[in-house]
Length: 132
Image 1 (cartoon, rainbow, N blue to C red):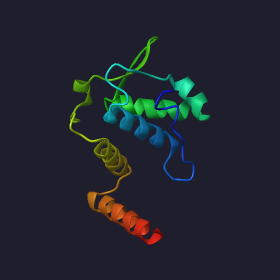
Image 2: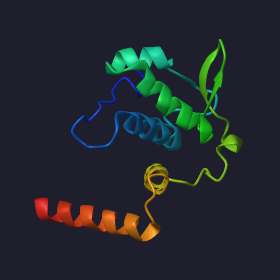
Image 3: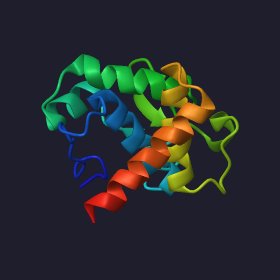
Image 4: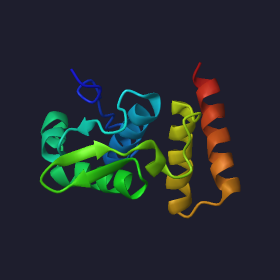
């Protein structure tokens, strides 16, 4: 069973499904569950497995490819990019750091300033502490 087959979407999280998929794949690559050259499920196969739209998975894959995590070879499939293709990412980046990097990128792409991102994280941490 592949690491993606055990992945469950959280439709109540408020985080778009395509971002959940993207973050999970980036985490699996960063943690070494998928290594350079490993083949990923096709967009259609993952959409069927997760019972979601093809377009949702395709959006996640396109974003991962744009960021250098994966490469698509027409007629051959989608593969984890070689380490040197990951740009500023280094082998010492922990899986948690990769998820945080993705979160920061999503927030910045949504137009949030650094101070706003920090304030949101602090608010979520405070909310979590209240729920204990």
